[in-house]
Structure formats: C-alpha cells, structure tokens
Image 1 (tube, rainbow, N blue to C red):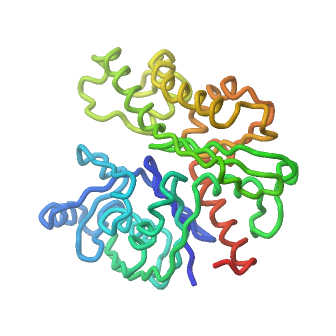
Image 2 (cartoon, rainbow, N blue to C red):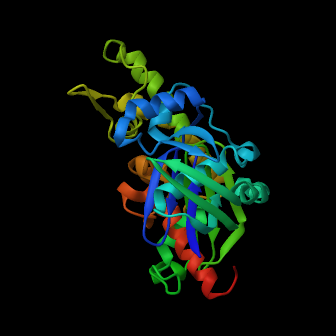
Length: 343
C-alpha cells in the first residue's frame, strides 16, 4: 500500500512518500463555481497552477495562490481536524505526491497539545478523495490512518537511519535529550530518555509560534518603511522569513536594514521559550543534547543559541529543509513500526 506522511503545520503543509516530498503554505480558500471557471478560462490550454483544484466536486485554492486571495482564517485545535479543512489538505498534497490514484495509508503528525484530537484527525483523513487538478483527475482512498507527535518526527530524523531499523546518531542515544519544535502556532517540547524512548512526562505545547513573529515584524516594518510598502498590500512570506533570520529585507532591488524590527518581533517568542525552558525543562543542565526542529528553529537559530546556553545543540535537518524534518522522521518512524509490527 502507498504511504504518505503529513505534517499539516500552521505555517506550511508538508507531505512525504518514500520517493517524493511536497510543501506549500498553510492557506485554503473555498471558491465558487464562477470563480473557478474564470480561472480555468484564463489559464487556457496550459491549465491552472496546482494550487487550484476541485476536491469531491468542490473548487478550492490552496498554498501561495490562496494567500493572494485576501484574508484567510487558519483554524487551530479541534476545528482544524475536519474533512472540509484537514481533509482538503490531505487530498491536495496527495495530488502533488502521486501521479496516479489508489489506496493510501496516512501517518499524520500533530502538536503534543492536540493529542486529544487524534481521533478527529484520523476521521477527517479517512475516506475517498476525487481530485481534479491541472486537467487531470485522480481518485484516492485513505484506508488507514495513524498519528505521531510532531517533535517525535524531528527526533527520529536525527537518531534513525533511512531504513528506520538502525541508529544514525549513536552519540545521542546514550543520553537524555530535549526536542524543541518551533512551529507556526505552537512551540512544542518533548523529553527523550537514553535509548531514544520518549518521556511523556515532559510533552508540552506552548501556544506561541513563528506566525506571531511574522505578524509583529510586518507591523513594525510597515510602520518604519511606509513609502516602500505603500503599494504592497502583502509582503512576500519568503522574504519576510529571510528578513527575520538575517535582519535585512530584500525587495524592489533594494536592501532595507530591519535588524531592530526583527529583534523586537522575536522578543516575545524568545522570552516565552526562555520561560518554558527554565521552569518546565529545567534549563540546560538536565540535558545531554538539545534537538531543534520545525521551520521556526532555523529562522531563530542564531538568536536561540545564547538563550539555551548549551554546547550540544543539533538541528533536525539542514537549515534550508528543516521544515521537512518532521515528515522525514515520520517516514523513518513508520518503517520502525512496520518492523516491530505495531501498525
């Protein structure tokens, strides 16, 4: 059976199969038939971008194209795990990962704080999905679903080899590790005992993430560079993320120094991380290794290092692809579960 690992984060939707990966911004908008038909006409023979699709008869736009359609509401908690929301993302990413339809098993991640909604997540995904996109039609049937905690995906991406059966980093397995997953809406914390066993006595979700940082940065940047942004209703998200990381916004053929804006925007999140790190995780001393995962970790890496004050901090993947660490680790975890016959 086909397998898809899904991390439907609050900033980016990520999916992975054994051979392909796909990601697009967490954005979804329902279209009317008239809107969808107009898009088809404008696209002509080449067809519309893969962001425009019809799922079980209903037209939608997702990803970057949806971000350009105006104000969007991103659901969180129980309200996101519904067929008309989470299920749509499942179908949309399936269409990007598989050229043909068929039966699929889903291994979906969620923040530790959403464990109470794992049944809703699985119910939202299971079922039949008929997708029309790019002039082609595919029918998928999600026949099985299971879940894992997002930080566990980042952890497994570090400690397991590709086959899920062997260790990749034996230097970590002998000690106690703390996984910090900085996502779009939450920052998640997970403790790991020697040998790689998860210690759920520390499995926290702090309700603040990189989205708040992005919004704060945009407000400050717009206030300080009014003339430059006067005719720009929406700042490109990828340029905003880069500006927060490096303190320099590049656009319009110019460079805008925004180190102060980036520092102010990240201060609230970093202060919350510092508070949780000290009071919940106990600071640096209880941990032999700290593993950073989630897209926000790479963005804030240089600002996190002095805050954590630890000499063995590991990114769960390369900085450019760390947003995929949880799904890559999720596939390794799936293979481990297959070997142990736990699925």
